[in-house]
Length: 291
Length: 311
Image (cartoon, rainbow over all chains, first blue to last red):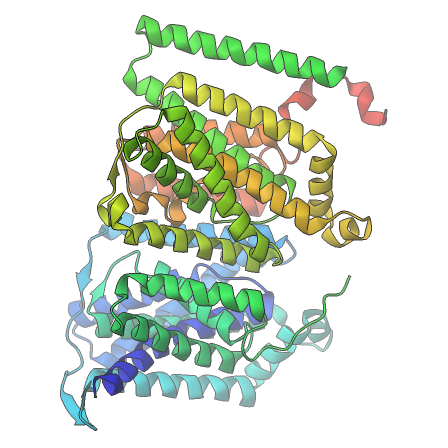
């Protein structure tokens, strides 16, 4: 029955990846930019959660909301300060800027608070209960259910609201959307805000689940979430969710077989295989390149 | 005729530079700290120039150059430490195996473009690092002890060969083919250039010299660890090329020298160094995306003005 437990662990980890991957995929879908700073937004979310729980005695949900709000603002600021000027620049320039912003945030945090890790306070009661013989902690159930709620909320925003409609229009064709009277800048800001707030929520979950956070924690989960986004088909929202879950499961399985040192390599091998054989991802359609 | 003259000038200049530094080291005017800094600058120039061939000339955006540096470093360290072969053979072996790794990585991934290629190279570099991390024979995470063998003479010879080969490659018809791929891959393809072939060749040559730099790097620091070859190292090399100007060899050389000197002085403050690095990178990208030199070379300054109007 250990397997059921591993699968539950994998799904919890996968839902964290999925939440980060959603931000990547939304931003890529709308301005075709790999937002490398997204992993750092995730890190900031974890730290905001930490300080509000440990410092100000917030509960789990108020801390989650605060982290999401701060990250949403941060995402919008990053977009406004760095990416907006680059909208017509070359892809390489945009990518390098994103890497630069990401390093800037990391080392700014290290500069102000040091690189030492922080132990996350135990904010969710950690009971375990039997589920067909597997020991399942209430934390993973909580994380899983909250992330499902967030993803449903995202689906609702994207498909049922005016902002969501504008987002879909801009990602389809920015110029045509502008001609139709959609405020492209506001829409892109909103995309960054929503994606970043999901990353902030993922940061709090990560802290609660792994109980250890540090300023460079965003790098590897950020890259892996990007792998998840590519796996599901970058730019496609359900793809990011499925990609995140698959990646979480694969990693847990690799660790369970005793190759935990190779866990990070597994993600990159998946990435390369996907890029080689189906670059458009599981849900993607092949697009012909036009001259 | 003119080309040959330029080469001799370059040869004479480099012999003068080499001789001066060697005399100063022998006379004891340059102490260990300065000669080490000079070696470090030269290694960084080799890395910058090798990546310049891939990004600046061929336009293939690779952000996994540290992976090939790691291959060169580990292979050459194994050759000297485990097989006890002489140092020059080790450097060459490091370069050749790195070139082989470049071929293995390049042939599948160079079909990808832009962002996807960048991510794939990053992924490969991480995989290479994790592989070394998991081989116990080379020390795993604790690293591998290496005797210091890198001297100014070895470093300078490698630097000279790197610059000479890459300059000549760029000026040859192969180099022009690479530049045409950078400018417009589809048009180059339509003109009958075998784009895949040239991309892979440029990538392998770049990896070869990164491997050479790896050999020098490994024998300069007494110890090599997988953590030295992470994403940050790739990023360091990338910033040399980008800051100097994509497509400008002398720009890459100048920014490698400048940034190595700056980071040597900021060694005591690693966070400040990274903050400055990243800010500079973002500001350059926002306000001068072509880099300091653009695609111009420093030698262009000495050319007569009349050439400008078309010869």
